[in-house]
Amino acid sequence: MGDADIDIKPFLEAVKIHLVNLPSGTMIQSVQPNRQNCLAEESCFIWKDGKVVQDMYLRLKNVESGEVELQLQWIDIPGSRGI
Image (cartoon, rainbow, N blue to C red):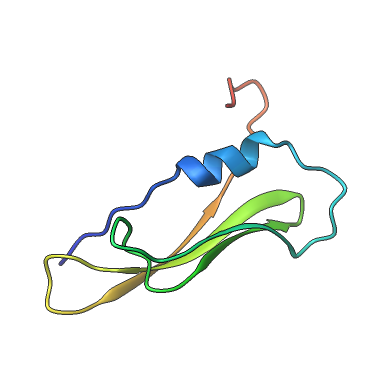
């Protein structure tokens, strides 16, 4: 099946900025592929519809070949502790 590692710390740091009133589609930050992550290509944090969103393509490890596409979104839940 394969596996992939992701580092969500940069994503959480972008969420902690508490952005508001940005035009939807604004790029906040990007992460480049390197030997410490499984990214197949550059991954950007985008302000989309009032949320921080990150699309990423990950190369699978421990398998002959394969990639997986993921999208992270931070959703505030009323009454939760948040970050």
